[in-house]
Length: 383
Image 1 (cartoon, helix red, strand yellow):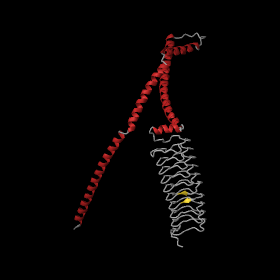
Image 2 (cartoon, one colour):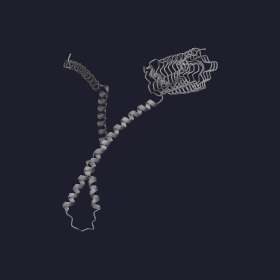
Image 3 (spheres, one colour):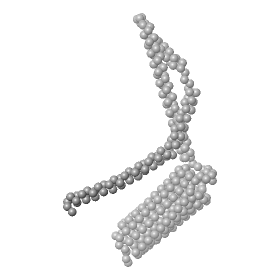
């Protein structure tokens, strides 16, 4: 095959590739057109359009009512214009220096008077028109602001236990963002579709209450009494549980991601298989707390005194510096990359635990069980 034939073959191959690319581009363009048509249709049919049109109609109706009301309260008096003009002219005449005896052209005076009357009329009409529009706009804005203010006042007003139960018994389940601070719901049982996300539940009494599967995400539960509460699979992510009493509470398979448990009472609390990723447990009171199989990744337990069952717990990247872990069971726990500086691990059972990349500087490892432990350097400990 000579050079010319090779070039032709190469050219044909290149043309075929270009045709294939062109077909692919056509298909992509067709798909994009159909996609954008669907988006345009969704945009034109979005529910907000109907809501805006309805709001515009309501505002127009309100504007008409305000205009009618204004004309009833402040009727337009055309004679006031003439009176103002007359007063203006009278002022001019009074201020005229009568001591002068020069000849005055009456036509000029009359022309001047006419100009003054027209000017005053125009000035009054201009002020009147501005006042009307300003009044309407201010009135509408006032009503809208008042509407939202009433909504906020209603939202921030604390709901009593009686009102809560009335609304609950009527079928309401969404209490998002409401103020329920201080109410007593102890000993009750709530449906699993109740939503308290973002609600203010500060100092509430929820002791012995069945709150399984309830949504408390982002809620304020500071100083709340949750003793012996049943919170199976409850969502407490981003919740504020500062100094809350969770003693003897059941939180099996619950979600407490980024939850604030600073200073909380966690004695005899059951966190089996719960997710406490990045939760703050600093200064929390723990005695016989159960964390079997719980996820405590990046949790803050600095200086904490731990007491309970931590077998199989995930404490990856956890902050445990200065913590007292002595005499506890951490067998099979994942403590990789954990900060254990100055921690007390005396007589702690770490059998089969993972300590890879953990920081053990200054830690007390006297009489610790390291059988089968993956050490910070990645090697397995052998006796």
